[in-house]
Length: 339
Length: 260
Image 1 (cartoon, chains in turn red, yellow):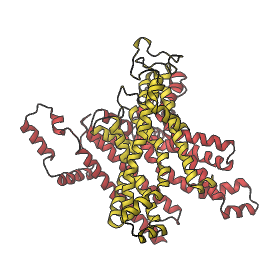
Image 2: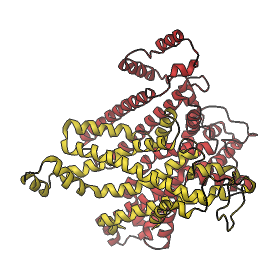
Image 3: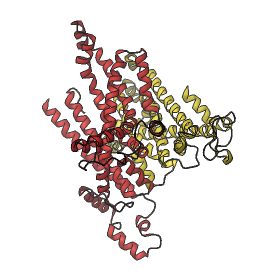
Image 4: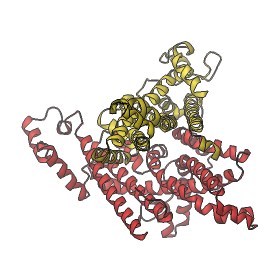
């Protein structure tokens, strides 16, 4: 049994490496379907042909494609994602600066999804087909059907502009001095520094975007918790527990829920890709300084190296996340094995 | 029901709309809902109702078009992988792994940055990220169906591979794909509206719902109708497809229906 788990993990890890390799192939291919000549675009239309040729040679654009790809891979392995056209800085440097804010937001969104989704799913399963279940169903459907960008604008308009209950866009208010930079995640930095005022301000700024971003996943988590709990409740050991005279609450919380949460873990892991996509819209609306907003800005400025950098990093993060999800799942449930 | 209603609206847009979605009336810009203009006028004095009605065409057609393209591609790849097997199977499945690694909106943004932002490119990008799911579904179906008796029977009667695949295999493998496709359309409409919202999909003055929400965002709190009606249209259409998907699944998979 141990052996097969190890083999499964090895195979799964190898697959991830392969996929990441394939992802670089796709981003590389994308750079080569650009209709305009990047060198001409960079130097301007009136650049002398000799200069264009020289720059082409410098960048390596005159070499055969496979050689160019290998050079691209070599740069990637060194952590070199090219130079951003927007701000003339290395793309990897930009991403390092913007990534923590996205991690902070996505993690908070997941916490929202779990804190709301799991209890709602449990209530939904316990009161199957009665009104709490119906209400939860409508709530979950809203998560997958509402246009997130409109919800964000509306909440921002009502809670910030109209009533001032919650702070506006950004990570901190302008009059709050930022905590010393450590992780780049403002709330975490404030916590470490023991700066309670900044922590409170950061958390209040986090509430709306985290809820908006997490709502989509909340719906999925709710539905998954509900259906797997219902499935588990019909199994023999639950019936045995009941037959022993155990209270219903105890049966559900002690016995059924543990096993029912397994598929929920997978759903949470798999919605991470949606969180990354969703963060583009959420961050753009809330002026959240993460990679989603960076991506929007780079596309607006036709900054191809930056766009491809974001795409590549997002794909790699997503693949690694899938790997972790699968590993956790395999660890928790010895019956499931990849074939 | 909802989907049928929207399909009807999309089909009959020219007769339902009160005026052209592009006609401007700058003198009355941003006037609220009235009997003449039930959804009010936007910042250029265009009738929001007519724009929402025409927008139904764009959204319904986009959703269906993307799903059709992605599933055609997915069916082909999945059938080849499941039927031929071996090296082809391995290669095609690893290809799906690669494409599944991209969050769809982000790859769509990359594609629209490299080509230029347009609705067609946005839809193309979404299709590129959707086909692997269909390919995997069909492959799994083909693998489980290929050793069935009726396939053997067809072969014994001298049917060629192509005939078996087209006449017997694919029709029987379609059920889960249909469920997946219906459930997907909602998400696809949301993604393409989102892309248009941030400016990388449909371009002005197209009456696209996501773009309309974006155009109305600055006066959301005062001239709420400009952004709210297109947003409601998105919500209803997506909700319709999600409910339809649930329904289709219940009909095609009675086991799930019992589970509740």
